[in-house]
Amino acid sequence: MISKIATYLAAMALLAPAAAGALADPVRIDSGQVSGAAAGDDGAVRVYKGIPFAAPPVGELRWKPPQPVKAWEGVRACTEFGPWCPQPKAIMGRETGKQSEDCLYLNVWTPARKSDEKLPVMVWIHGGGCTTGSGASAFYDGEALARQGVVLVTINYRLGPFGFFAHPALSKESERGVSGNYGMLDQIEALRWVKRNIAAFGGNPECVTIFGESAGSASVSRLMVSPPAAGLFHRVIAESGGVHGRNRHLKEQAGNLEPMEKVGEEIAAKLGCDKEASPLAALRAKSAEDVLAASDPSQGLFGKGTKFGWIVDGWLLPDDPDKLFAAGKQCKVPLMLGTNADEGTVFLKQLPIKRVMGYEMTVRNLFRDNAPEMLRLFPAAGDDDVPGALNRLTTATSFVWPARSMARAMEKAGGKAYLYHFTRVSPVVRERGVGAAHASEIPYVFNHAATLPGAEEKDRDLAKVMSACWTRFAKTSDPNGPGLPKWPAYAAASDEYIEFGNAVEVKAGLYREACDLLDKLRGTRGSVGAGL
Image (cartoon, rainbow, N blue to C red):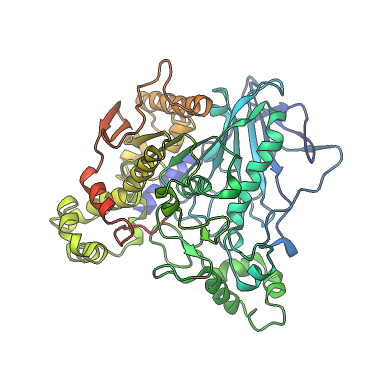
């Protein structure tokens, strides 16, 4: 199964950015001047790649909050992407570029011809389980979106043991008494850079939409409950990820998850740094390769190894994000969010469950007294039914229900949310039997679907509609507009959502029985996936 989706994503990786044309005029930002290049044959979009938004987090700056960029003289050529954060090979087969801890760079696509145009800004936060990925991936080329009248920004942030490593000695040296959320601090620093500098590219710093998929979606959702991020964005789009799922705490046990400081101590011991006179100096002296190998980052919903990600530290994340959302403590900005029909398929190879007996045992272990009801909703009569049942169970419990819960929390708090469900299966995916898989909406959102192998007219049309809805929301806080499908704001009473598939239409009650049951089980066990 994974090999099939890997082949699909390898095909996606052939979506090379438009060939750079003539150099674009220099733009002055707070650290100096940058030059970019014209994108496409007509030069209607300018692209600036590899702009540093923080100092390289290397040496003494490893495992410290992002620091200011050192200003430069003259014009810095920003026509090549910056390095990716060091990472293991991705399970989903995406391409990677050059890797380095010196990775805090962002990229800007702008259609503005003048700096005073005040175009809406969209900032993309990539997925990859907080362990893999980069804003430099060709998967996220921003030219087509920028052509719809927005300034598009993609960012890097520290990943895995470089972005989410905690240790008591790191907490002690911090003025906040915390450690571990460096990747999230990078995301916030990138948004601060946007606030200070995006006007130079014709963007409006008072009209910023943050959006992302998978771990990027979970990131933008957590930024909604992070006090230091307040005021840095004005709309949010969350694709296949939210605030639910278990988060490690910095100093306390969270269910069966060890405190992240203890995990850091265990990694330090593996590296032989725990007995040194200065464990931190010894840790910072280790190579990136050694740190990556000792930490063994886990990938996907069910991957083995160390699960790195956001940490409840009492400051950046004051409490578990789902609790903060349920209590109405999120930023009350317009929210658009949704899921894909077959979120579970790309993760199933990580599971040893192949037979009905193993499937039913898993459901009983997760749902206890409610297992009979869940087995009724997600039945597997024979072994051949197990993959489909697991896919639907994972999709409903780890994606659809969390999205509905967030939409309901927004309605309860007096905000607006727009809920979607993506069901289109393109020809290249259809051949491989993975359905509307995790991440398969991305080429439609970025309006790349026309270049998919075997793309049909339906794919091109759907990409035009979806990218138009996404940019319309960024411009107006509402995905509705002339020539666009009617998309009602979410209301619990009607439970409506819009389906983006072979047809685009409003429906209601997606996995309603399962979601209602999960509402009753909130705060207990009962989700197949532990997070993204």
